[in-house]
Image: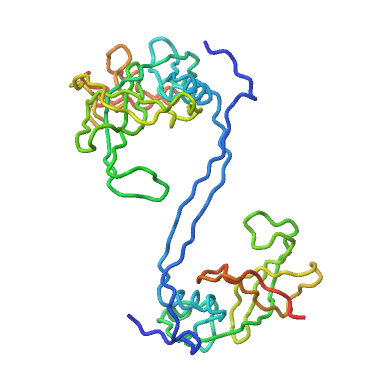
Amino acid sequence: MTEISLPESLRDVEPVRSVRTPAQLDYEFTAGDATTRFLRGITQKKIIGQQANEHSRVYVPPRGADPELGAATPLEVEVAQVGTVVSFCVVNLQFYGSVMEIPYTSALILLDGADLAIMHLIQEIPAHEVRIGMRVEAVWRDDEDIEPTLESIKWFRPNGEPDDPDVRIPGEKRGTGLGSWPGGVAPTELVVRNPRTGEGGTAEFGGEG
Amino acid sequence: MTEPQDPGDILRAPLIIEYPFKRTTGPVIGAFLTGLREQVLVGSKALDGRVIVPPAEFDPVTGDDLTELVEVGPEGTVSTWAWVTAPHAKHPLDEPFAWALIVPDGADTPMLGAVKAPGMDAVAAGTKVRPVWAEEREGRIEDIAHWEVVA
């Protein structure tokens, strides 16, 4: 390394080697209509999704629209509090802001009756035993601690049911990880196509169901 | 169908996103920050003899390594400034003040600083200022709490 010549006054002091430069962004988050309905459901220990019509996908948590149909989702549907692990990640590193004891598992959980997986923690099982297809159930906070936040569900834990062998794995040819197709039928080219531009809808994506 | 929701019932909450960056400084910026902790301003001497503050690691003209660090200031001269009438929470002063480019004595380039002054009329290009050091210093730019006008 290049030798630096210091002014006299700094030659015998401990040099600074690093500096903390935190960046903090303060927002006021407005939940919007759909998320507010979802979070009010949580305060009653209900998990409520939305769908555009009785045959279309159930989105949990809902965002107020079905991005596939380009339609609003005015129907509310309560989904089950049990579901299937469709993907997971074992966290082995402690990071800033985390209060979890490592290792722990974060998973995408497809609740029964939902077509979109939610992300949550898996606990009450060693991290290395978590697997795709595992059946899990929600574990709620004590009633007096329930608030309009998804953290009111402390975590999910194995519910003892046998694994689901048909779980759709994200990235597989026929699936998008969104879960069971409406009515158990894979989307046709028509459904997958962008309704505004008419683009999209390849045979590979819509392929064998 | 869902019933319409009263807009006043829509949930809101503070959302604070924080990135806890920690940067290594290298020997040049490290020396500058060490200087702040020790109440000394440090610049680097460019190949053409100019003194750059805060110190540059490379010569701005030739790109050569700059290795000679020298003490400057601590007093300096305002070269240009902007008056802040309504400081916000993250500003260094909670009263109206001037953001100024200040050329420390012995330096050839200006550095940014907040100048505390009784009013806009007390600051001008050419005003002499000096740093007011923070009581607790740990080697960061906030070690200069602000600058004040030399009476």
